[in-house]
Amino acid sequence: MQITRDALIGAMKFPALHGRGGLARAPNGSTVGARSKGAAAVAMDRDPAENGPYRIFTRDQWAELRSGTPLDLTAEDVAAFQGAGEPVSLREVEDVLLPLSRLLNLHVAAARGLAQVQDTFLGQPSGTTPFVLALAGSVAVGKSTFARLLRAVLARWPDHTHVDLVTTDGFLFPNSVLEERGLMARKGFPESYDLRRMIAFLKAVKAGVPEAKVPVYSHQAYDILPDRFDVVRQPDILVFEGLNVLQVPRGVGMAASDFFDFSIYIDAEERDIERWFIQRVLLLQRTAFREPSSFFHHLSSLTPDDAARMAREIWRDINGPNLRDNIAPTRERARLVLTKRADHAVERLALRRL
Image 1 (cartoon, rainbow, N blue to C red):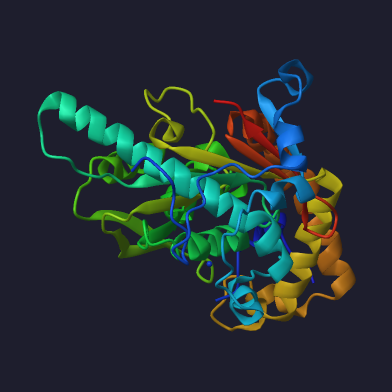
Image 2: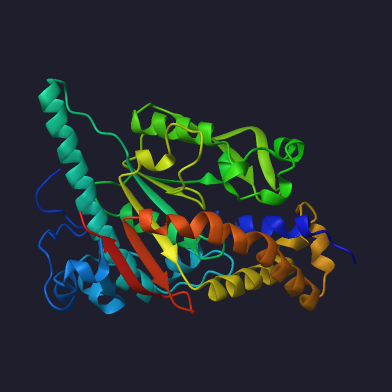
């Protein structure tokens, strides 16, 4: 069976099968504002020249910074958030996500305090605007699963129970536009996104408009759904996830990152990401692609060897170049870089100094 290269490109866009100042107060009511001591403190006290603008933490050092933040998720909850080929354990939530949720809770409190200072200066009533958290990284690196879990743990803090998640897929140009511009084989590259629409959405969110609309992208149809929108209604936190969120586009006065309060980049060795991508394609080929309504239904008849060969070609010609040329160069723009090892577990974290 002859399959064109473009037919598998959509696999790279399938993230899942289903997709105030002072001490902070944890979900259980305890205060967690004090910095924990121990190995993590050693990491933070290193010579700044050693790691440039970042403080480097091992997984164990980072886990110490949880500082009593309670675990309110079960193993079943975690499993429900997993995407295709994106394994994650309850231990990952404890060691990585709970300390991160504590850090972000403190950042949200600081941002609100600063906003109150400005409102006081302007002599106007205090208000709040959503805290925007960006999450970037390659195709198949596990962004979607991480984003869903992060949303869940952040929403368990009483200071910010309303947490929304938006992916940049909704800001892809419709297929009709991509076809007209000869960009169907470049889906996921910077030029395939309606950046002006994305910036307009982020402007609306940070301006505190009652409702900000996001076009709906269907991975099953592999296209934007006409006249379908998700609505973001003034969340406490907005998690904004996608390949391109940290890119600085040419010819556009503002970048998406101008509206971010915090940003995270998920990193891994390219050989591991490529392997995860191939595994994802093989899983989808046995599951989601078998649905008759799937855009990729015709791929369900491929042999595993043929599907793996096609996935390698897609990585070689599309995903790999997009990672190296457009995504990886944005890594050092992130406030926090999480590096995964071959089994998807985070082993190292780099936190930018303020």
